[in-house]
Each structure stands twice: as C-alpha cells, then as structure tokens.
Length: 179
Image (cartoon, rainbow, N blue to C red; front, side, top):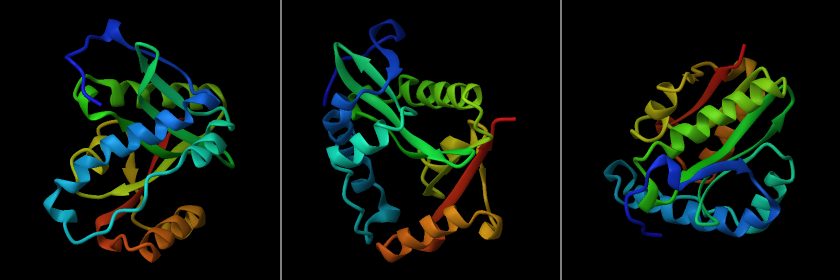
C-alpha cells in the first residue's frame, strides 16, 4: 500500500468489523516488509502473516480497532481477552501510512477502551531490540516482564515462538497496567 502524506483528519478509528479481516492480513503483510530490512533478523524465518479466518476469530471478540482512510483499513490493533487482561496479538500500520501517529493512536485508544471495559492490563509479546517493537511499547507505558513465572500464558506464548524459530533472547513479553 502506498499513499501520499496524510493528516489526522484523513483517517479515523473505529471498532473492527468482521469484514475487515482480509484487510488486516493485507496490512500486516505490508507492514511485515520492514522485518525483511532489519539486519538483526536476517537469519530468522518470520512466522506467516495471520490469515483472514484467524483475524475474524480475533475480531469476533470485539476488542480490536481499525484505522480507516477512504473506507479502507490502513492500520489495526488486533486483541482479545485473556482473563482480566487484554492480549494484543498484532498492531500494524501499512507502510505508506507509518510515522503519522496512527500506531500510537491505536495503542492509546486500545488502552482507554480496555480500561473502560474493566481489563486490568494489556499484554503482548514482541522483539526486544527493534525500535518499532519493545522500545515503541515502552514509550506507551509497557514494561518488559523479565520473570514469566507469574505469567504462565505469556511464558507459553514465548515457548511457542521459540518452537516456531524465533530466538528466545531477541523476544520479550510485555505488560501495561491499566489501573
């Protein structure tokens, strides 16, 4: 996806709808191209992009947001409940729309919605040292969980990532309290 520079008035946020699922996959695929340019990941086979059916299942939980411009999805936050926590499975913005605050706005809106829905925290797992991963989330109030003993769900996600070929030492689980 390519686009000309946009302003805040050129896009809006809304609750994701089932028919957004195909576009979620397209946006994730487009945004994932950044990983192919990251030298620290040159020896890693990245997991496949989620397909539309997987996104439909996440969207059905009614906790995902879409950033829309000209009636098409340009970014999204795909999340679903995990007990009293909300797990962010994917935050992606199409390459042509990055660096306009869309990802930050999606994340802030997700935090507000999750707090209003009574969740106590948002969790995620990501790359530790890539600028648009853990450092980005840290700027938005997330903390790296160094000891996963008290977070068995996240520990299992980290193990599944390692089993899929993602190096343990480059990944981390994160949490942002909503209290």
